[in-house]
Image 1 (cartoon, rainbow, N blue to C red):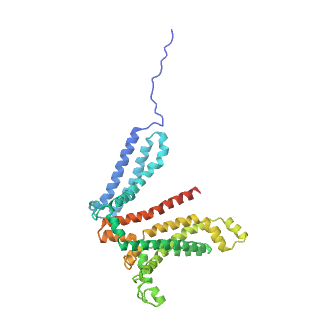
Image 2: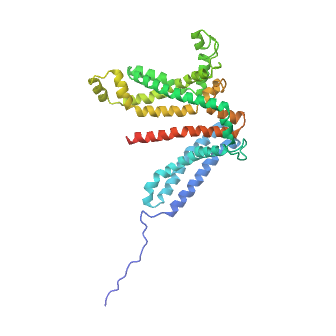
Amino acid sequence: MTAATISPPSVEVRGPSAAQPAKLLLGLIGSFAVGWLIANTFLSLAYYPEWYFNNRIVMGLVGMLAGIGGAALLFYCINVFVEGLPQKFQEGLIPYAFLLPAFALIALMLLYPAAQTVNYAFANNNSTRYVGLDNFKAIFSDGEFWIALTNNALWLIIVPAVTVALGVVVALFADRLSATGEKVSKALVFLPMAISFVAASTIWGKLIYDANPNVGMLNAILGTENNWIRISDGRLNSLLMMVILIWMQTGFAMVLLSGAIKNVPEETLEAARIDGANERQIFFKVIIPQIKGTIITVFITVVILVLKVFDIVYVLTNGQARTNVIALMFFQELFTAGRAGRASAIVVVLLILVMPILFYQVRHYRKEQAR
């Protein structure tokens, strides 16, 4: 008599790599619910302040709670969703999952408005019907647009180059001072960065360029009574306004370039001196080549800033006396003349001018990372 072999009942064992539908569903629903709640909370702060008793303190506290607490809860829900995926997908998706809210915000605040602006550039002033290339024909046939474009080109040629050059010079000489002298000198040069463009324009317009020699320093020095930012020579007006931007951005250039100069190996400098190189040769043939990457980065950053320059020209001349720039012309077309189509066309032109610079900056950054 043979004993019957009894096989144990088969049990389905779920390995750690299997998907977990409950977590997937909970994380997905939770992420959408939390995102919807955060968005509507901020919309209610903007459109229904009476819900919060029109009290700015209460609104601020609610905004902080929705922003910080909502972000924490959103990332928790995203994490639950990722944990519900098969394990082979988890490690690869975790970075993208946590970057998803940032990408969504960029798409909402940058990409969507950019796409809509391009769309409106082909529409009429009320954005109710398409008019083809009429807006582009109108701006390219407008003499004021070409003045603005020429002024922007002048700003691009002068401001970034002078800013970087002054930043290198200040950084080089400040690094040769004592520790206290270096800190004080760099703090003074960097201080204008803390001032807004409007405040800086007002300071220079009143204290430096004012027509009254008892107020304007430039007239007091030269013994004249010129209103320097209102005279007929538009090129001189633009140059005087460029001085303000250079004054503000030199500190930014100095800080980055000073760090790059400090990272130049001392052994390289000593080797150059042993080989008989003087300080001028060391500067141009040793230091400059080794900080070239930082110089390019600072230059491109200032170029992008110059392409968007608006505040200084708006405060001092409002584009009069042949000083207009593209960003200010957009403002005038949209808010003064009420021509949304032309304003959008101007922005599209500015976007086209900026894109090659942005692509070059990305390529340069990747090359620097590879090194």
